[in-house]
Amino acid sequence: METRNWVTEAGRKDAGWLDLFMVRKVDPSHDAGLREGDVLLQLNEKRVTQAQDLDVVSNNESLEAVIFRDRQRHTIKVSTLPTEMAETGHLLSFCDATFHNPHHALRQQISVIDLQVYISSTIEG
Image 1 (cartoon, rainbow, N blue to C red):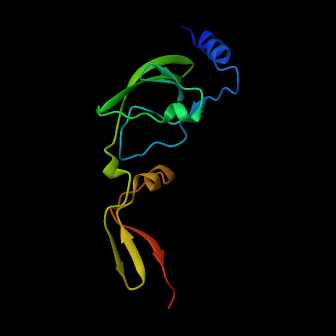
Image 2 (cartoon, rainbow, N blue to C red; image 1 turned 45 degrees about the horizontal axis):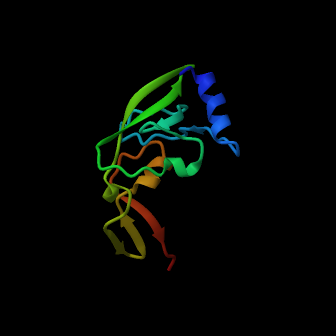
Image 3 (cartoon, rainbow, N blue to C red; image 1 turned 90 degrees about the horizontal axis):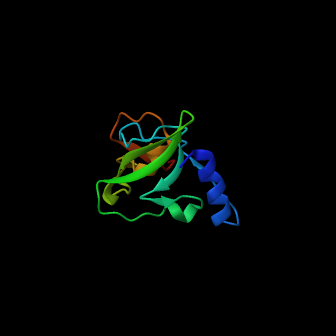
């Protein structure tokens, strides 16, 4: 389906609000197949028009995504991450500073993280 027709059809089926989701940041340590600026149209053959459509549970190592990139529609495989990589499992508190590995949300916010140690808080004194 042509992209223009996809947007028209999505607007018809979702009579309320139609959102388009653009990739803003890509974790530099994880090549997931997505690039900054990609617009996400579908995940696993399900149209993405609202935030809850992004809540996909999968035991597979990848998801099939339909994206809009460089003025063309593309179907790509997007690799997934195990949930243990998304959270902090261990931390160390030493000399009033808290050290841990950079968690996934932090990696999404900062473009380059080469170190495996992140200081999340310090206490004066």
